[in-house]
Length: 118
Length: 377
Image (cartoon, rainbow over all chains, first blue to last red):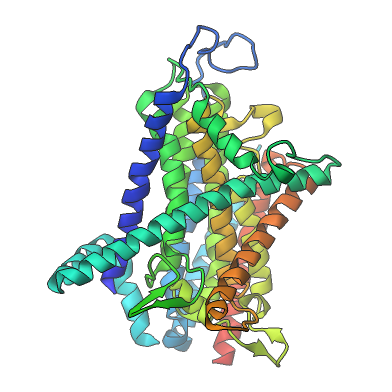
């Protein structure tokens, strides 16, 4: 039933108001006397060197790309799984072919070394 | 069965659109119905939030107490009997602490990140059912804020939105520890999300519905009279449960997968630069996520609220809730137990474990379940 979705939006609206109000309320009661050393980026008491927007390893990008591939696959599997009994043998074979293509790709990226974290 | 499935598929497309249609359908009915509907939803919202936030606070207390005893300490004892008022004291302290916003942060995202994290962590409670239903006069109220037929999808959706809170916090803080923590957290959460999603597919095949209430309803009764008919005992779902368990630990950044926070190397990771109430929000988000994960595990694999029910009607209505809460706290206890026992993974081990072991295992388990279900049908 479509109107069942309404309470979810009521819920989100409620906490969407409650959380900022809590932050504002805290602002009214808490002390506020910052100093230079309090406001430094925290690096265990040592003066920070270099910008913190430095370079980081490309592995994170590869993980993100692989995630997109496999997550889309998972999304495809969900409606199939729900309709599994209704689709019968046809659905089973169809999904076996889909998974086979995916497993071939998985083996390929493994052989290419995309899963190694060096 | 088939009709409900088709309904599922069409509503996957646009919950927002459906909500608009739903509001229109409501407006077509008389005004009294709308007011009752909204008031009942609001009361449920407030109640559920109150219970959830209390549960979050006392999960923290439980964790400190249990880990304390595991390490030959007492845990909190000073505030109230057994330290039971500790969560209240913590809350007051969070409120009255100085909240530093360092000048080097990117302010809009820095402020938005904790709110994003906590809002999406709390939202999933909106679709989690906690028991059958109670009758008050002419009103028949299910013990759930709302029963949508794609409940599980909504939970998966909002919990994966939580990654934005973490990633944005790490980036906008403009600190090296935060950036590293945020990157690690995002990479880890998206890696384990795949295994998590795949481990649920088997349950969906057995049940044929996304509705959490339907999934629990199919788990009533017993096999051969003595084994409860929970999904964990069905086919290969035992393995699916363990895949879910491990991925859930990684999703919530808990030991042994707490690399994003790793106190000893990253000094708290993505929330290094946060203090006071904003820090409390990340804290609440983490524990709310743990409770959601525990609730989903109970609903999908451990039979939800099924259990022995006896006594007068009021007890019959409330006992299932008790069984459900018992399961959740059992699951949370295991969380804490694992924290007290295991050391932390190395990052390459974490990634290798997720991509090279859990993912193939999840796919294999899915295939086996498909064949088992096909053969039985």
